[in-house]
Length: 223
Ligand code: CTP
Ligand code: MG
Image (cartoon, rainbow, N blue to C red; front, side):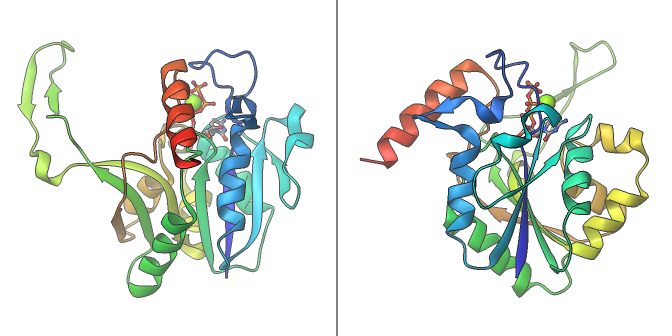
């Protein structure tokens, strides 16, 4: 049995719609509801906790537990984890990825089950672009990375509770602020993190352009 933590407490500054991104309408429903509906279709997930801005706790969808988010994303994950107990496995998901399917959550849970040595399984898509690293001047190429080994990391990220709890409680507030995903905190502590190949269609909504693309994809999926 697993608990799912949805982080939805960001301000959505790059989307610029004047309200928290997770509450912006997407195909007629607040963005957050798409992830909640997908998770409610996963039998192994028995509880859903949503981290929201402190002023918007009443926006939590029916059947979920609302907690106030923190200053940075990983603080929101920590607050949500602290609010629930009793599950050995924790699914962490960004409300900003409303196209994640019940099948993707199920596959991630299954993969963790299949690998008892792993502390986490994270959804990721192979990188399509060639990635170059620049030097200290921010403009001159220092090296070209081997694309065949690069993955663009997404959520869901599924953790053994003990490993996530340790990583979140033993990291400093500064490290939590630097963490763009929770798996990094687990990797750093020596935990084994496995990749689950996922579809680039599980996109993250950051800009108004992303929102338009997600509207088109969702409309297509529903026809
Ligand atoms: N998030 C959160 N608490 C924070 C910051 C982010 O719960 N303090 C969540 C967001 O709600 C989102 C996910 O983490 O679901 C990924 O963050 P991001 O895409 O950066 O969303 P925002 O922080 O809302 O957007 P922006 O950075 O443009 O303000
Ligand atoms: Mg942000």
